[in-house]
Length: 252
Image (cartoon, rainbow, N blue to C red):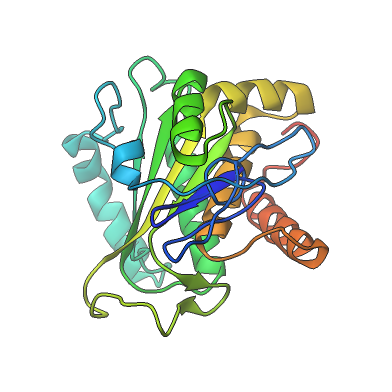
């Protein structure tokens, strides 16, 4: 995986950022190349995540639940809240899915993974993060443009805020007032790789999708796998999130 920085790109191999940091395919700097073993990668630095892709990109349609459905769930939700259920997450996750893939991409799972990864790292302030699903060809173009690597990869991260693992926003990084929402960055995932890598690894596509998502989010949070200790820490955090969601290595 790779990730991008200022916008930083991150894949599973690395993690760039706004201040010149890069990640890989399954990690940061620009693309993340995730193998069957779910190893991390590192992507390049794009000019701006918006130039790479955005929820408004033509052909990508975010999944939105009908207003009626939301209304039907309102009363039960209020009862749960009154009963002392978990407060709503302050993070807004926007998932952009191309036409034709809406039924194959589990957008709700992506949203849950992003929020859980941030929550487990102690993030508690209002923020947003975009996840864009693309084809292998689109991913190759992004990788070539932003990282100078003319090949497709599985995931790219583009951090827009300088974060430190477990600490949040870097003290020397200019940010908005606490009451204003930060945009943490963008994650770009090749769904072709999600399917092929899941089949190769012998586990569900949901697990592979969740794995690539959490890997990229960890890069945005400032984690990397450039050292053995860093790789182990990322792996532990990835598995903790996947286990909490019931996505095991045994194919489930």
